[in-house]
Length: 256
Image (cartoon, rainbow, N blue to C red):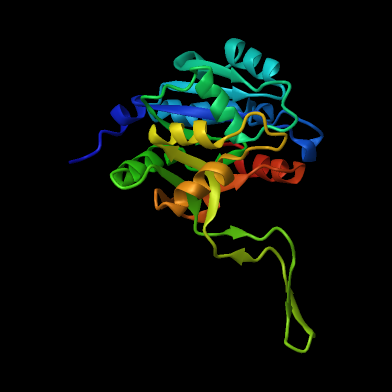
């Protein structure tokens, strides 16, 4: 039976993770970094709204006041969406996506009856159909798996590679070589069963960051409950972690 993608999108909530502090980017609020006259969070909303998603949970921390103000007053696509907000506990010394997700569950911001897409605005996708593609890929897997992680077939190594022979002599240098290993794009799709695992495994009282991938997905993967969906080509995704990444993304998206 063919999948009704827009119907499935309406039955799926999007958790937009915007809680982190960009320490490598002069403490900018990454979700509000501007590209082509719009912040990254607007680009994310646009892609998902235009693919039929309606419910969005904004899981925010650092800079949440400015993010809320933008979404409530200036965003075009927020007006076409059902937005809910969950704010990190300011007493946390370190947060992580795991804590943000658990708090959103405790706050009843995440609907426990709906599957979720977990997305980060600073993971940029140059193909606007990616939200639909990953949803279809997950649904085709979900009879057997609780979660699907979205990967590329590899990534460009950000440093100069040095090729050395067995004697220790340098043969040559390779700039920005391609590393052919499955690379997580930051996107995941999860079924409601995963919420119970978040509740059970994530410790809100921990002084350390609780990362969803390490604390929850690794355990589920060990139990055979996590599938992979690879989007191609690898160059349709990039992560904005530094000011250099940001400048690269702006140049790539200029005029688009």
